[in-house]
Length: 71
Image (cartoon, rainbow, N blue to C red; front, side, top):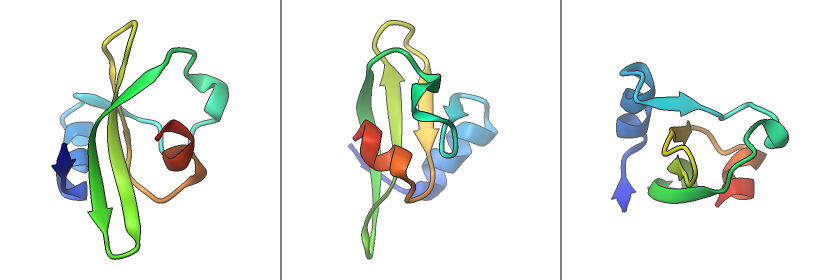
């Protein structure tokens, strides 16, 4: 589902999603499913994921290596 980066950041502020923008790749041991993404001028710039086992929401809000690792 396509969304805005502002909505993804609002999910973090509301404590609905955990911010993993700058965490290490091995910090999350479960498989993540992409449920929403944000597209800007230069391509994908944010995404919202759900953990398959725990159901926890995770968010990435910048064009970091984690964004492309989990996509």
